[in-house]
Image (cartoon, rainbow, N blue to C red; front, side):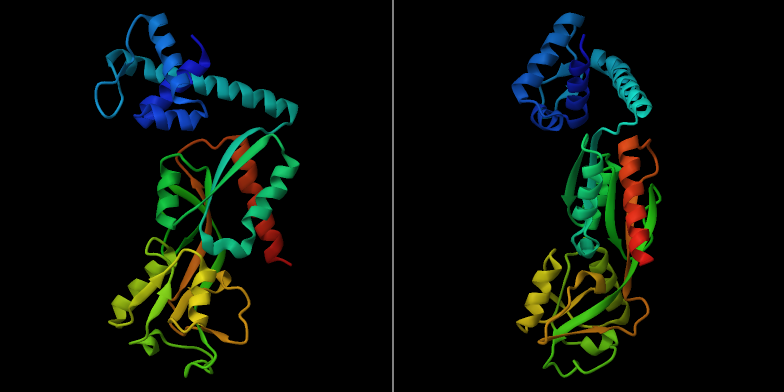
Length: 298
């Protein structure tokens, strides 16, 4: 019995599929199947029921599963113990990021960490807030930079890294362009453009529009704030975005804040509160918090 066989077995059970499990452990699907067959021959029992669309453990497989997980945890902890004594960080850290935190230069922050710890592989994934929160909950991510309008889920530990007011981005020749600040109701009847519905910004905008009974439909959405800014410059509508997501605008555009107090969001660094974080992930989280603190005091 080999550790890799137990690793492949656990991956197939958790993913319910040989192909997804193979991608997860970075081995070909035939290689995963062959190793699990070898394990079954050694034990003398079938461990997986392959008859349905989803692969499920047999009764013997169910009995083996907790012991296989315990063995993998023991090996992982042994490696961590050795690395800690040697002062070496290693492993893979999965980081999520919503597009609107681009102004924080998250890739640069992570590259700086990786340069100091070359044995740590960092996998960066972009997506909407809802998608990233689900990935944190399912254990697919170790940490994520999230934009949220309300309170974060209770299963996450979070640090607020920036409070970000929403702004209206509109053309300089717009009749409202000379205003110092706007009320959302002043955009009634206008065509709006904003981030997708799974973003904290869009959730805050839609909620505020509905609460105030304002008819201002979002006619165009995109996950890249710069695309929305370009659409506003073309006269396609008024873009509603977090201030930190908008690069300095050219002469053809104006960025105007809102007087409405609820039109703001927060950017969080979040990580799961319900499972043990390995030293590599802990180190990346601390590095991010330190760099964000350094920037806020300069």
